[in-house]
Length: 428
Image (tube, rainbow, N blue to C red):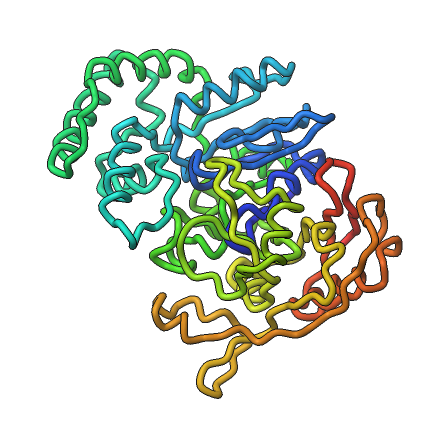
């Protein structure tokens, strides 16, 4: 069996956890490949809402082992809290089930403090980070001064390395006007984390490779989305990792010939958290309605999400950059009652028209490009009970068909409500 990649096709928060939850029963291994606890995947199961920030969403499936890959940056306290919450619900999260790649990098409290100091110093130009220490941890990784999970195998030596790193970070904090953190206390806490997490450590790339070579299905779970990718998103208003499908290969350590399908996940409209360009944003009652009906508040921070019309150039960009083979369209039900609907079909500037998102332009240049809209009929019916596409109102079916025509790939999952069973699933 090959690898399947699930990737966000917009600015994150598209409902990837929900899609992983639906396709997870087909997987033998579910592996998270990028980001940190700045991401939040929400899965609703039997009335209980699970908010997972590090543990792959496939944890709910008994047969699937779970791996947190080398491309992820891990806050050990957050990981342990999630393991404890899942264990309290009766989910098996033992070392035989949940694995942590030894090459994954670790977030320290000083990373979070540095993140906050830097974000505050930006003032009106703040990026809107979650202040979870993600950027500083990836910066240490790139500077070859980070701490890797594999070092937790020897908790005492690991504590010494933590102390040295905290001391170095404290000097940076003081230079930036921040408060230093207690070195011995942090080192002792991380020594305890190491004793707890060491049994979960594994060679992540070897684990993935062995599964693929044994004919098992590996489901690769991404965090955030295309437009937050460090290289291909709306820089500098992006995250610090590779959020695109290629990030699964580097973050987990396997080759492209194993990949059979890449499932893009996009909402039936568009949302964004934090600062940065958002051409189809609605600052009116329609945008506010999307936010309230769709419960558009960040899983990680609780911040209200910015809402706007669907942007087809962004989805076309996602198809190209990720090599999408199919699309999962979530939250179609949120659009019920809005008539007419608008979708962006192109961008124009000074008489020039393009049908792709001008992602490589700088933020100032991007502001000069304006979306070109096409009006589509809306529908009034409640669609949460639909389980086949034929059961949707004609206008809703036409909306889905218009997206498929624009992208050239099939929509194989349509979310029509927040519960696990409120989906329409079709074969590609």
